[in-house]
Length: 179
Image (cartoon, rainbow, N blue to C red; front, side):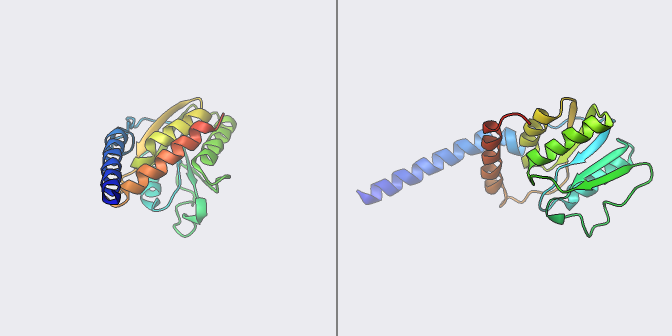
């Protein structure tokens, strides 16, 4: 009897994991990104392992895609990189989000957009975060959002964690109202 319950639990877990993998694939693994275009600003969402995304955003700014480059710097990821220094022809701002979440970053974007009159913003993050970031930023910023995927490599071992973390973040965002 005990062995049967264990087998049933394993089968149910395997089925649920397979369904989650299939359902989550277009949300996390192959999210919709947008064709890059000129914008008022490039806004980088922060996070661990994000130096690739920061450097990617600096490259976009250097290509002239936007005159403003704003980078979230949670946990002081950028402090020793030199990426927050001024660049020729680009206003660079780095900030500590408060709260230190995607929502806190989106609120900062909202405030800066109001102050500076931004109507189009390129938002840079890494692949598993794109769909959730689009949802949260879209609740705070009424303008055009161009979601850009950084070339940051995602380890196969990270994907199970990404599914769980991003899904929990979606649920939390869905339960919150407003920006």
